[in-house]
Length: 427
Image: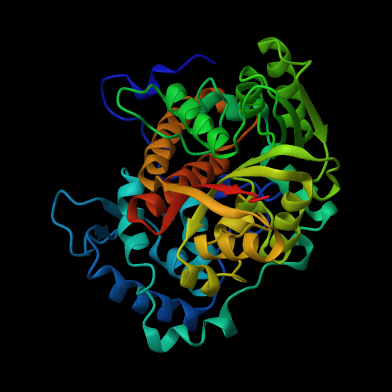
């Protein structure tokens, strides 16, 4: 796919997907239990009271079918339109961390500027629930299911549920580099140039140059391997997604680097050999906190003395990471099962405790991720008709739109960040 004109074109932004959709579109065979909201009057009343209290101070407008409005935003503020209040509050009452997104998926509420609505919520995330109630969260929040534990088999299933959806799906909204991670924008960069700037930066942190042997943990669709091979390196790249391996092999062959890149269907825990450099871009988020020591120690074992490690990771503040460590959220249920976002402290401590490597460099560029996600969301909406033809329904479309907007809001608000790290072996 060429560098799409979606991010350059003049005119209005693509419109959200069919708003609102009727609940019966939530096909029971595809979306079990989604069409019918839970029923818990006591919890629904409590959720409504907390919601009304929270939005009073947010810079947005919340409108109801009877014309009443909440929120601190003026006429130009982003508008959240609640279409089915009873269903909305019953979903929130049953499980706010999942029900809020599910209510959007089925059209209980909608918005023309979805990231604009979600950003104020993200900015106030730590205070939306009053402190005196937060102490009870461990009694009411769902924990991540044991079935989504990131064992070797569990990781394959978790990755399959997201990355094996369809290569065609991802090609509709990613740029021609097929990078599914934050770009690093420089002045005047196209989207693809910004993705290559990101790759060059993390490869520099890893010390990749002509003659280097490189282990990549998390192949994606092969662009980092191609970029490393173009420097004269020899790359072994690991993935547990068959769909990604198939397309990565084809793209690497088309670029002329099949003799320099070996893509293996292999878990990082099964890696062998020693390398001058290890590189991993936004894969650690899928590892799971209980497996971080194994992940870090694997890097240490696979590096030769004097080797370097380049890492790109989504991060969050350490206290928020600890508070959310066992929570089961909408993102886990519908997008990334088994995942947890680390903090900078967790990464630095994990590397110090499990390897000989020392931090040699670091940069943060979270607002570039917000921009990246905005471009992906606009491309996704602009190509929705094509995506439907791949067999995805309206509920999936609204789910994916919510995921991209939800993530963009996280970075816009500063709740989420993205860092690149360089670690070096002093030997």
